[in-house]
Amino acid sequence: MNLFGPCIKKRVCSALIVGSLLLTSIAPVALAKSPTSPPPPPAKNIIVMISDGCGYNQVNAANLYQHGRIQAQKYEKFPVRFGMSTYSYYGSYDPLQAFKNLDYVKNGATDSAAAATAMSTGIKTYDAAIGVDINKAPLKHVSEQAEELGKATGVVTTVQLSHATPAGFVAHNPSRNDYSGIAREMLLNSATDVIMGAGHPWHDDNGHRKNTPNNYQYVGGQSTWDALFAGTAGADADGDGDNDPWTLIQERGEFQALMNGPTPGRVCGVPQVYTTLQQARSGDDKADPYQVPLNGNVPTLAEMSSGALNVLDNDPDGFFLMIEGGAIDWAGHANQSGRLIEEEIDFNQAVEAVIDWVEKNSNWNETLLIVTGDHETGYLTSSSSQKAWIPLVNNGPGQLPGMQWNSGNHTNSLIPFYAKGRAARHLFRMGDRGNDPVRGYYIDNTAIAKLIFATME
Image 1 (cartoon, rainbow, N blue to C red):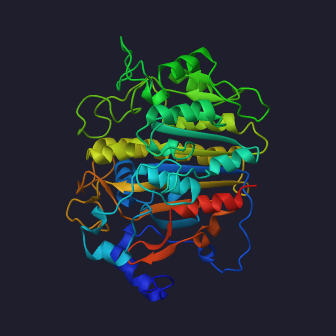
Image 2: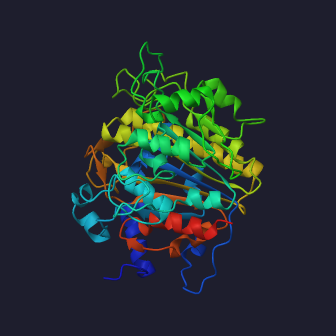
Image 3: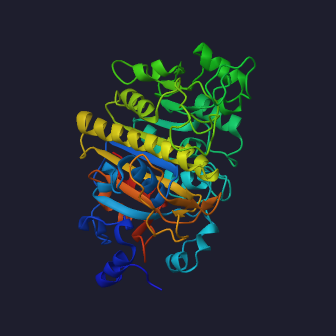
């Protein structure tokens, strides 16, 4: 069945069914898909922001809690807005089954490693794969292409720096679980200029200093950490044949200081916390948002993102940066409504900071910004229905919306995708695409890398 390009009336009918929850309206220019279309215009700077585990209702839950309305984020008004399919190599997405059979999306979901690899290389692979194909052969990352063109590159996350999503944009490994090996590749063998994420071996999830260290696996083992601490770790990042050691920052004040003024050439930021900046802290993990005090010693994602941008924009050739709100997924797995909202708000504030940077320090002609997720986690729906397109119950700002979790795992649902920048309009012709009876037009996650490879100047 050809699901592409149904009549407009059918799409209008779908919109009437779902009302205000239909979030995939698109600027007409975004639908250009002629095989004779010119190549996308070049982009000097490319920023990909990933809300790990985020579907449509995760965005809505944060909006309703913070603003008492949906469609409250600037990125929700970006000129290019689609749904996005996320399945891995052995999966598929059937838009008719997704809304006919409520259990359909509980099967066939990707994991974060395969999803990150697809978004970073344009090639689908098996679950747990980091930057390799189904035969475990290394794939080329968009960050590697950026480095070949002389650009600066970076990855930032709220979870461990060697976790699936940041790893999936830098490393090559058959298994996402080889944290030490992945961290060593990222820190000792890659040309990446900024790496920020949790995994501090000397602090717990509440940011407290430990008497004895945790496992050093997330930072590449004790010898790698010792070299980072001594300022000697790091391979040749600029191609001159000399090693370029990392400048290690740990304290929140150091992250905040990085946001303005002169910066080191390479920065590894490891906040003083073990697995996540906030989500894994102790206290009632099912409490309403912010009822349990936040860890005060760690940076926000906005602060980390702003610091990373201040480092990377020193390169006159431009940069590639991936920013992840990683613990949205963790809250989804644990069905933590309050912490899900905290994490999504933190991600949204980081997007605001990035938009502000573009408009103050660059422009939308030379910078491409993509905001999306890697998959949905938790099958989050309205409190009155399992149907994902029924709006969450709006209980007003500062109140948990009516919502329910129907799974503790990833789902194969379409997720929202937003983009802004001169090249963004070309996304719809980059690979697989279709039309969903509820979400409207959608692209596949491989389109992200395909566009970036095509538009990188």
